[in-house]
Image (cartoon, rainbow, N blue to C red; front, top):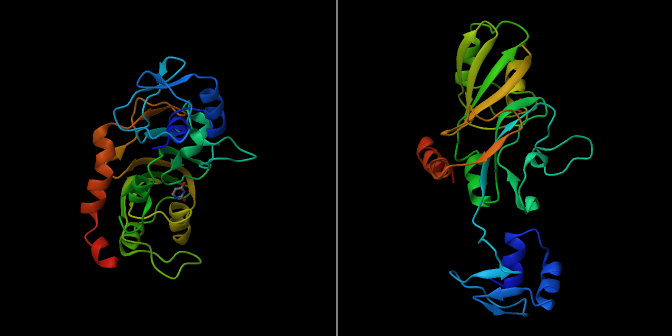
Length: 244
Ligand code: URA
């Protein structure tokens, strides 16, 4: 990888400011001062800026406990974003893997690995998402069967994929979805004549929101959590291969 790109990917420096660092003679590769931004950096080489080693940038994966009032967007003029909650360099490279509404709380996955993001969000991969739902009215007895058969949402031509509803209280349930249509949970309950009053995402695939994370807190995913997405997505939907 080009030296200027390597440094800008790994630090908060832009390609332009990297050029200034190179001109000032602050950059070394394996101990030798370099000035060429196009120099190729090979794996295993050590790059330093003012004697500080630049860590190689591997892909990053985080889970965040989204609070109410935050939007799942990289930028927003009116509301704080989930990205604002991260204290990380190069935040512009991070993507949100599956958005939640401003009034939904719970698990949000954030990464700069585009393929991994795709594995989480692609409808073909059918990564299951579990939501805890509270509703205005009691959940009617036929809701579970209707959700398992799929419901036709307002404005859609195809039914939702089979979803599992586990009733916890008269107006509270766990709902497991295999897809993530726009406002899907709220629209599914609206189709039943009910209204969602609180919504919280507990898990995505095999990744469950860490109970130690307070609202607004985040942590890196463990290697197991990271690899679970591709594995569970490949195995969880036998239809995915034939759909292509
Ligand atoms: N379904 C919704 O209606 N809202 C969300 O935030 C997530 C799923």
